[in-house]
Length: 148
Image 1 (spheres, rainbow, N blue to C red):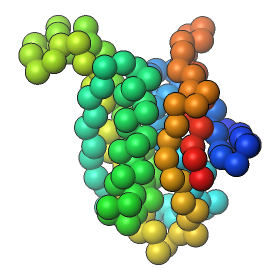
Image 2: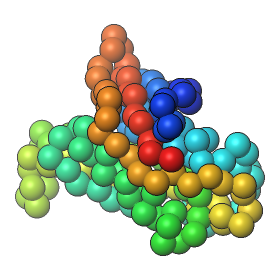
Image 3: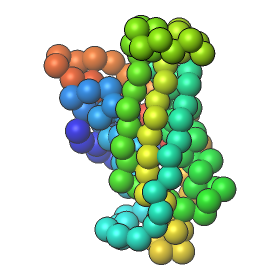
């Protein structure tokens, strides 16, 4: 799993890869963290969990990143050290999840680094502008633009 920050006109983009869809989502979230602060303390901050449900893979990624930005604003923390699990619609149905068998689901966790412990720049929002999320060979690829 890896990510790179890319310059984008008046914004910042994250280009990421992962062996699995879950690893890809975590890599994009790590890219969001890196776009927000040049350095993040290796320790400190409490872990928190988020769950997201959406109608498609792309919507799931968008809603997950949007939720991380929301958590930053509400908790006054920079989400870091991301962990994700993604459940595809057919997997949910096989596991007997009757809430919405057609929904994509994500269960994730992050370490909330207090904003006063980092020199963070504000990422205003995630955008659908130029978003890409696709399988490439044996892995996954994503490109996401953030409004700064």
